[in-house]
Length: 110
Image (cartoon, rainbow, N blue to C red; front, side):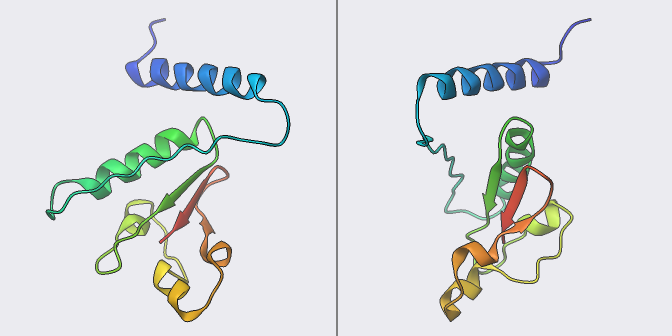
């Protein structure tokens, strides 16, 4: 059975992740991050970000941060209604308390 392009990329990501973790001894884990930005609205940033977050969550624990304080909609694309948002950080709440689980391996900071 042929693998789809999605499954080939996911398998490659998993094998690189496992190999990288095997080389690094101790409790240190190298953080990986990806930032999707554009100065223009309507370019598809939210859809790309939501899709990539789901994709990466199949291979590793993933945090999706929606830093759009005006019209953030990452929660809508994940089918979630958060009780708090990134704006609550400015009221003095700890950032860790604003993270909400979407799935077992995907968290959201809306």
